Structures are given as structure tokens and as C-alpha cells.
Length: 271
Length: 314
Image 1: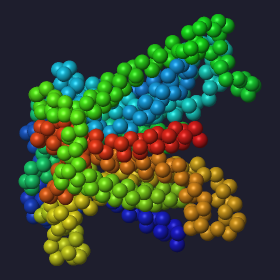
Image 2: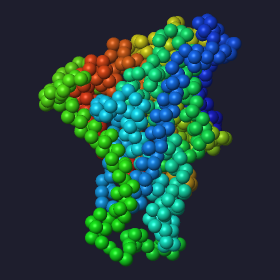
Image 3: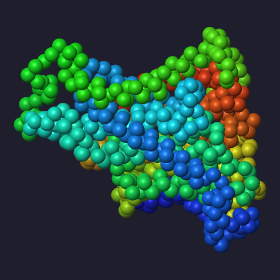
Image 4: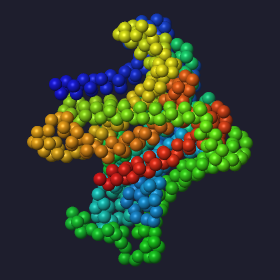
């Protein structure tokens, strides 16, 4: 009885979660005629790649994809490097202002972009970085760095002190103990944090919408949203674009799911 | 290890020479300052400074391309009496609490399902987490298409397959259903985070507690009420507060699905801020919109930060 209910709930949740992605994929493979006719609603007959062809040939999709890759990868590197050092410092080293900085990092992680986007835009413009990928790369650490730092602080705290102590008794410097003993142990955490930073940057919408006006410089999320035309045929290549935008994130996620699930719960809830 | 039990606080970096600087700035101050410097610079430049500038701008009359003119609290006073703003506040509250409430329930169901003895548990966990990692814009566009009036699959199902409705509903274009529809999408995206966090909390509850409860004759419902729920208390508080902040400030879903329409029925504060800033070009007022709820939000953030730090130590 209880088992049946459990599987019932599981089935319902899976249906609700998976259907939109299924529907997106099916739509992207349908022909224009089939879409208008409402025939064979849940399977493309015939399966056509017209939508993908049109997306790649007639829109700026590839340019947007490139922009997204450049922006997300660069800001992930910045966030992971800065966040790893900061998190280790806050979790392990004792210095004046450590408690204050820990609180500051946590609070900045919680300050929403909806408050920051206007003044950040003014700042980016004053620096001459408006309407450029560099502007987004400069702005994205505002949310990726606090997140990575907070997540990794928990990770470093869970690694026993004794390992560093024995390394230092054996003659390692403080930095050597970090670099050769703690960092390798924290690698799965760093990987998870980097992946989350990447997903956040890849998915970011508000800053990209506000900072960029040049059509060619848009990132994928903003570019895709400009496809909303209300026209029937628009949905075909819009969904093709949606499939290709989701793919990198989902592939990374499938490949590294274990780390990401652990990382998420470690970062937000427990240490 | 013998070292660990005998260790006293401070021995780690205690070197033979203890200079005055070490005493004031802490034993690891050199490496510490070096490691934290990049984070500190970024936090100052990208969060603290813009935040301070936002507060200043909200006290000015500022149009794009013109210098700001200081006007004190005028923007806030004007907003207080503004009907559109009041409606946006009300909508934001409905959107936030409606969504968080349902996410809490579905997240709990998800955690209970994944915590019971089912096959391929970790696989299902991974699948159910997908809405949380997929790009929000993609999800919003998917639902825009699903909700479409003439060709959307939802109306197709309800009218042509299940025959529960005589004709389709304009889910996002009718004031009666628009808010519920955008809330549903926010729930869809956000519930996995609740579920996965609760699941982590459930796994941390010692099995002996359940055994003891079972020995005392507690049924599944009683065990949930008296063992599971109390054990999850801190996590529930943290997740609910986190989600409250995120949902209250959610821009993408509403912007893509309705842009605040129809007729302002789903106008929430972040979208209102955006339109005021980049539609009406009134920057000072726009920031005042964003900051109006700051005292309430700051209270939530402070309470939440306290719980998150406590959750870490436990």
C-alpha cells in the first residue's frame, strides 16, 4: 500500500518534471505543417531538422552561443579561483576581520540582483564596458564569488585540521599545506562549486538583458527570449534553440551529478 | 591521532617568535589577507559600492544621461501613494507566499519519496533535480509554449483529449489565471531545491530515533510528526527563507511569461523596477521601487544568515 503510494507520487513528480523537456524536444523536431494541423501531437511525424537548420543559418544563435561560452567560462574561472582562496582563508586561517568577512560574504550571497542591476549598470558604463562581453565578465562575480566562497567554506571546514598540522610538522609551509594537502582533498567540492558558478553564469538573464544592446553581443538566454514573436512557426526554432541552450548544462550535470547533488546540499544547508 | 586530542587552540601556527603584528592581526595574517584580498575587492566593488550608490540614487531625481538631483525621500513618498506600485507589492507578496507554500509541500513529498526504499533512488534524485539546473529562461519559454492559447499542449489536453473544458483558456492572457500560471512555473522550477535539501536533512536524522519511536508503537504518520519534522526544523527554516528571497526577486519567469500583464495582474516588483528604469527611464524612482522593501528583506537576510551559520556548525 505504502509502496504503491510512493511510486505513485514518484511517477507524478517525474511526469511533471520531464514533460516540458520532452515537449520542447518534440516541438523542435516537428514540421511547420504538423504544428499547424495539431495532428500526432506527441510525436514528430515526420522528424525534420528544418528548425535547427533555420536556427543556425538565419539567426544569430551561433554568435550568442559563443558569447555565452566566453562569458560563462571566464567568469567561472574568476569565481572558482577567487572563491577557493577566499573560502580557505575564511575557513582555516586566523586573522583580523575574518568573522566580519565571513558574514559579509554570506550577506552578499543573499543580496538579490534585482537591487543591484541599475547601479551596476551605471558602474559598468562609467568604465566603458557597457555593451561588451567584458562588462558581463566583470559583473558576474558579484553573484558567483560569494556563492562559491560560501559553498567551499563548508567544504574546507569538513576537512580535518590534523592533516594540515601533520604536514606542517613535517616541514610544509602554511601555503604548502593548503596547496598540496587540503586542495587535492577539496577537489570534488571545487569542481561542484565551479559547475554551479558555470550554470549560474550560463543561465543569467537580467544583467545580460540590461548591459547588452548590440544584437550580436547577446548571450543565449536573452537572445532566445527575443524569438518570442507569437507566430506559429517561431515556436519550432525557438524550441530548437531551447534544446541547444539546455544541452551543455544538462550534459555537465549528468556527467557530474554526484558532486553537484552533494555540493548543493553542503553549500546551502549543512557543512 | 595523538596530536589531535592533545591540540590546544593556537598551537597550529605558533612559531617561536611572536611579533606584535601577529598578536594584533592574528597568527596567519599574511596569508589570510593575501587569500581574502581578491574576494574583498570584488565584494566591495561589485556589491557594497553599487548598493551604497543605489541608496543614494533612490534619494535623487535621475533620468538617463542627466546628473542626479537630490530630492530626499520624495521618491519613496510618491511610491507610497502610487496605485501601480501598491498593486505590484501586493502581487509580489501573493507570488512569493503562494509559491513558497506549495514548494514546501511538494518538496517534502519529494524528499519522503526519495528517502523511502525504492529502486534506482539516486537516478530519480538526479532526474527530479533537473528543473533546478536547467536555464530558467528555457523553462519559462517551455511553459509559454505549453500555455499557448491556440496551439498549446495544455489546452489541447484539456479540451480535445480529456474533454474537461469546452474551450481553451488563455492561461497567461486572462487576469483570473495569469497569476496562478506564473506561480506554477516558479513552483516547478523551485521545488527540487526544497526536496533535495529536506532529503539531506532526513538522512542526517539518526535511525535509532525511528527505531525507538517504532518500539513505542508510533505509526508512520506519528514518526513523521514527532521524529522527522522536529529533525528538519532548521533546514526547513533556512530553505523557506532562502526561497522567499529568491522568489520575491524572481525577474525572469514573470518577464518572459507575461511582462506583468494582463493589465498589471502579474506585475511584480522586479519587473516593475525594470520597466520604470528602462521603459520610463526614471532611474531614481526605479531604484526606490527596488529598495522599498529592503527593511523587510534585510530582516529576512539577517535571520537567515544566522540560521545558515548555525546550520554549518551543527
